[in-house]
Amino acid sequence: MKSFEVNFDGLVGPTHNYGGLSYGNVASQSNSQQGSNPREAARQGLAKMKALADMGFQQGVLAPQERPDVAALRRLGFSGSDAEVIQRAAKDAMPLLVASCSASSMWVANAATVSPSADTADGRVHFTAANLNCKYHRSIEHPTTSRVLQAMFADQQRFAHHAALPAVAQFGDEGAANHTRFCRAYGEPGVEFFVFGRSAFDTRYPAPQKYPARQTLEASQAVARLHGLTDDGVVYAQQNPAVIDQGVFHNDVIAVGNGEVLFYHEDAFLETERVLAELKDKLARRGGNFKAVCVPRAQVSVEDAVRSYLFNSQLLSRDDGSMLLIVPEECRNNERVWTYLNGLTSQGGTIAEVRVFDLKQSMQNGGGPACLRLRVALNETELAAVNPGVIMTASLYDTLTQWVDRHYRDRLSESDLADPQLLVECRTALDELTRILKLGSVYPFQLNP
Image (cartoon, rainbow, N blue to C red; front, side, top):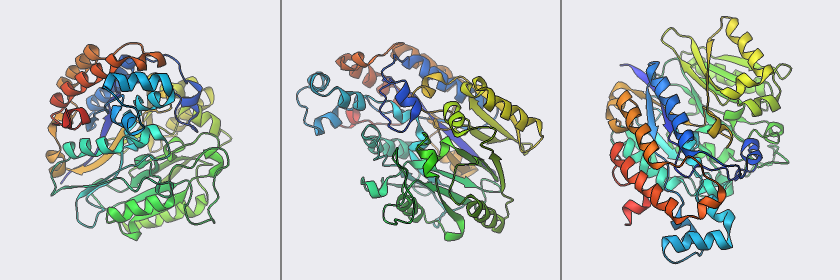
């Protein structure tokens, strides 16, 4: 039976703005309060989805969240009609309104952690929505994320869904941004790689000094248990605290893996030699041949990696066994990074080609190609059980592009978030989107009209 890695990309929401909400994310903070273009952002994301589908890769769409999140503002004490809640928040607590309007759910690498059926004890694909409790604006996402994922992967015989972990610091979980999987083939048992920034209970693990470590070891271990993973199919690694303090807020900003290959920066992990040896050994027991591609700091500094998002790239397997690296335009604009990539592909190794995409609207908010996609390994039967409305086709691309053009503004500033009409526009757009993607009622305004 054939198996595939399907990339489900997050569709940028109508309230895409630069709120500078993500402390520790250099791009997010440096572009704070600049004007955004939600229409262009959504179109850039759709163009990437369509291009990868045209190349023959399996591609899907993951819907955005309802924003502003009026229910979240009500829980914080704002009352009245929806319009009054928004206006009072704008007057009394603008940062809370900005947080409630965040379109950060487009970075669906943080939506959940996914384990394919070949790895799990019950032979189902398992999803655990990430609690994202390090940042308030993201911590409010997981209830809707869970409903959307359940609408996409509804067959209970093939898919298992877990609620987010407890929303406390000890179980901070950032989803697939700190998780990848190595395997000989997508349908065969693999080794799941969990990267954490700190331990909540074990003081032997050093912590960063400047920026928060968002993922805990305890959260990663809990997800592995929930998914029924075995010890011989899991490797845990600590992220280097020094690179977290340089703006590497998730592992996918400093490393990316696919198939049998890990592409990583020299400074990405603590105990790198031990981690690589464990990955190699465990994958070998499952018939795989682990390969590590290390980018030396002498050629690409951590600063260059963060600014260009070199490692927040998509590493995709092609039919001939080689790999394609999808990078943002910022990589081509960084002389040292581009020189390294040209040298890498000229060597005739596993990574054979680099393709560049313009994702400026997302990049300015601190997320690149890898942030925009949630990877789900599926066999033919499982893929056939996925809601067909979310699978990218030429027809769906055209429909979504027209939908964006009808509903999205081409300019959005912080002051615009106080306009109650923005909520009306967002709900109108999402109500239509759920029909396009055949999701049913997944948003709060649909469930509690």
